[in-house]
Length: 477
Image 1 (cartoon, rainbow, N blue to C red):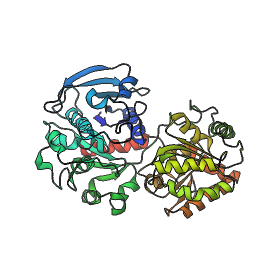
Image 2: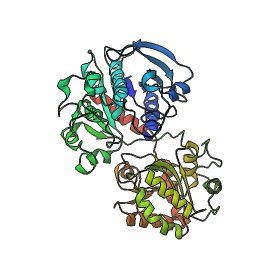
Image 3: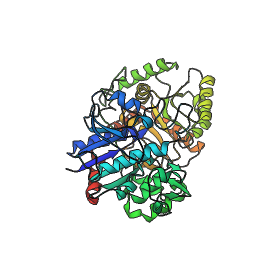
Image 4: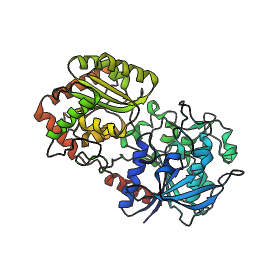
């Protein structure tokens, strides 16, 4: 049994802004099911403290010189009972608004201190300086918010844990002014190109990539992509130099949370043996969203951040042709103001054919996944992606670009065992042709049913991926 600390800035259902929260909930639970002693460390946001009703103080200590002491709280994750430690530092985490940004959308100016503190506490729990009796043998870091952990581990008293750094999206790097190294108590000797420095700034992500024992991305294809200039976001040289330490493990999904036969968010439930009920869910979704109730109209779904990365400008280019030919569209998401405006305009222009909901709604995301016929993910790059797997599991074949985890998880419908529709060129014409092909298949009931069943029967859970992580941990311990 290995003592594993999984440190993350968000975890479902306590606090969520994206897929990291889902992974942070599911992977530790899968590791626990394999018999490992895995525990979470997360910041004590208001939402987290409110959600964890039963918690106790297990330590009070100082993190940085001259700061007020913080508390470490102990609790259990809802549903899974995975132990979770909460860094209770009200001055830094108990704020109204999101975990990374204030209400007007700007980043909290003291984010370096907030997540530097999280990183250092993680390192303390993985060293002889641990403020509690439990000491991790392996610290699993996630994205830039935990990137300083491997640096601090080197500065802690031995024995020290090994570290793994998972990159969920290399575009988000946590780059800050170099002056922060003093407040964060990082020795000046570490501020160089072979340390924490990146183009004159302190980079949390670069620090993790430089100092972690192993680097993991969330799909094998993405592990290769980020070693090239186009997708490396300036980190490709470092990643290429550490090529032997870089690997990709495809994320899984929570198969209990995403199960159409038991999903609490659905009015109509179904399974692989009774897909006729899925049509009833489609009619209910059309009614809820104010779309024309028509079981024969191909209903396309999007649940996404509305950004350039997600290729949703390409979708805007080809939608008029598709809508004019009888398709419908249901969109849920938020992001760039210009994308939000253009999609809302589309909904006005095609009233009864297009529904756009700005924001995030957990229940509606499940209903769109279950009630639509075809799910769209035309991403320019996608480290892993989870929605394409949700779509397959719910009998809603995805249209995806061949990149990152989309390439690793979706089998093209032209091949045996096809589970979705795959295109290569990041252009509106290629996307439009692929959606048209998907709609043609939809109108051929036998062909489409075969694709649906292939997806619903595909193993997209966490057990296999958790086993690969465990093998990775064992290889460095």
